[in-house]
Length: 88
View 1 (spheres, one colour):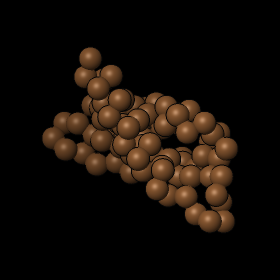
View 2 (cartoon, helix red, strand yellow):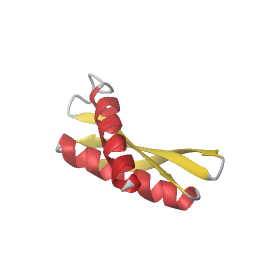
View 3 (cartoon, helix red, strand yellow):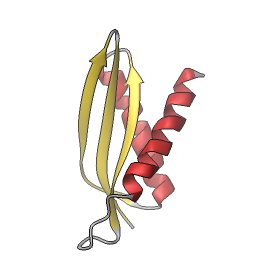
View 4 (tube, rainbow, N blue to C red):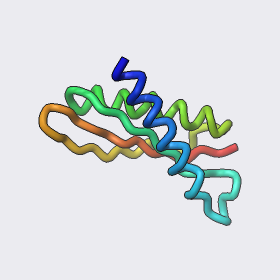
């Protein structure tokens, strides 16, 4: 249940982040992000990847380029943000 909540929040945040990062040179492409939290970095990255995939699907685009990760540990949980360019 908490996992679904994390995914829903991450997808919403990714949609907001992705909507504001369009450049004029790449009007059909945006930078999209997703956030995930888990016990350990690998699980957090997996959750972030799932949120990123949902955000790209919501945008209606295809992933382009490498995925970048930014992770931080708080107590026993790790939170990662995955970002990637998505183009229509």
